[in-house]
Length: 480
Ligand SMILES: *[C@@H]1O[C@H](CO)[C@@H](O)[C@H](O)[C@H]1NC(C)=O
Ligand SMILES: *[C@@H]1O[C@H](CO)[C@@H](O)[C@H](O)[C@H]1NC(C)=O
Ligand SMILES: *[C@@H]1O[C@H](CO)[C@@H](O)[C@H](O)[C@H]1NC(C)=O
Ligand SMILES: *[C@@H]1O[C@H](CO)[C@@H](O)[C@H](O)[C@H]1NC(C)=O
Ligand SMILES: *[C@@H]1O[C@H](CO)[C@@H](O)[C@H](O)[C@H]1NC(C)=O
Image 1: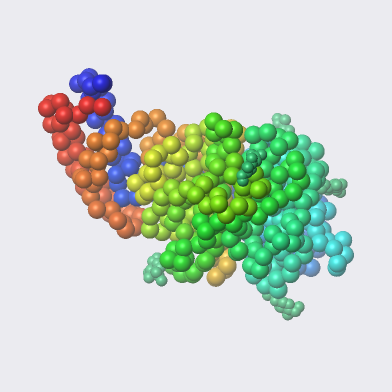
Image 2: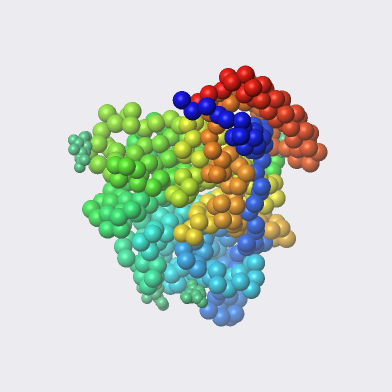
C-alpha cells in the first residue's frame, strides 16, 4: 500500500489549493477567460464579383445586410467557414468562408462556398445547390459535410425548397462529391436537422450523425452503404422543466430536443462514444456508435439500456453545440443561458456543476455562443452571435454583433476543472471538499466586487481545508 510521504505533501497541498480555486468556487469555476477575439462584425458583408454586383444585390433585396447572421462555424486548414441560414430574406449565400491567410482586417468580407453559382436559383422552380445549412463539419479526410435543411425564410414566409440533405464537398477541389437526400420517413412533422457529427476514423467507412431537434431523433448515415436510418430514444426528448431562457433580459421558451453531438476518439473496440443532449435539457447522455452503426440493433427497442445518463450541468446549464477535443478528451459546451463556454473532462467520473470548467464567460463577447470547434492544430474556435436578439428583437448595426473567439485548447482549459495537468485527487480529499465547500446551489455568475468577495471566502475555505488535511497527514490518517 502506497503511503503519501511528507515530501509529496507540499505538492499535494498546492494542488488542493489550485483545485480549490478551479473546481470548488461556485460554478462555472473560474478559469482564465483565455480566448481572444480573432474576428468580429457589426454586419456580414461579402466579396461580390464587382461593386456593381454588390449594388445590384442591395437594390434588388438579394442582399439585406441586417438579415444575415452566422450560426455555424468550421475551420479547415486556412479557411474559416460560416453558415448563414436563411432565417429571413436577403441572404446572398448561406455558406461562406474567410481566408485565414488574409489577416488585414478583423471584419473580413466573406467568400461564398464553393462559389456564387451554388447559391443562385436558376429559375423560380429550382432550389439553390445549397439552400440553408445550420451546421457543417470538415472531416479528417478532407471532406466538408453540409447538413442542408432545405428551408427558406424560417422566420417569415417559410418555404421548403428541398428535403433535408447531406452535401459532401471535396475540400481540395471544392467539388460536390455527393448529395444524399433524407428519405421521407426521416422527415416527420416538425423535423428540423440543425447539427451534425462525423465519425471519420476510417475515411471510406465514415458515419455521419444528424440530430433532429423538432421531432427528436438521430439519423445515422453510412458513407460506404450510401444509406441512412433514423434512431429513436427517450433521452432525445427535451425536459419540460428546462425550456426557459433568459439572455440579456430577453425571455423566451424553447422545447428543442436532440441537438448537441460530440464524438470521442475510437475506444478499445474501435467504436467512438457519442455524447449527446437535447437543447432544452440540463442533462448529458452517451451511447457507443457500435449500437448506432448496426442498423438492426439501432432500430431495436431492446437497445434501451445501451444509452447512458452521465449527469446534469446544473441550473441554466442548457447546452447548444458541444465539441469533443479528441487529443485531451475534453468536451466544450456552448451555454447560451450563461453567456459562457464551459468544458468537461470526459475521463471524470461524473458530470455535475462542480466538474464543469469555465472557459469563457462574458455578457459582451459571449452573448449566445452558437458553435464550437477544435481544428487539427488543437485550436479552439467559438462563434457568438446574439441569435436571440436577432430572433426576438433586432440587432443594432452600430454594435459588434458577431464574434469569433479562439485560443489553443491548452490555454483555453488552463487552470480550469478540465486542465489535463491536474492529477485527480484521492477520494477522501474530494469528500472533504464536499463537506467544507460553501453552499453553491444556484449562485449566478458574479461580476465586479462580488467576485472579490467570493474569492475571499473561498480562500478562507482553502486555508481551512489545507489545515484539516495537514492534521490528517500528521496523524497518518491518509493512505491510498
Ligand atoms: C495560405 O498560405 C499558404 C502558404 O502561403 C498557402 O500554401 C495556402 O494555399 C494558403 N491558403 C489559402 C486558403 O489561401
Ligand atoms: C410574405 O409574403 C407576402 C406576400 O408575398 C408579403 O406581403 C409579406 O411581406 C411576406 N412576409 C415576410 C415576413 O416576408
Ligand atoms: C461552382 O462550384 C460547383 C461545385 O459545387 C462547380 O460544379 C461549378 O463549376 C462552379 N461554378 C463556377 C462558375 O465556378
Ligand atoms: C430575466 O433576467 C433579468 C436580468 O437580466 C431579470 O430582471 C428578469 O426578471 C428575468 N426574467 C425572467 C422572466 O426570468
Ligand atoms: C447487429 O446487432 C445484432 C443484434 O441486434 C447482432 O445479432 C448482429 O451480430 C450485429 N451485427 C454486427 C455486424 O455486429
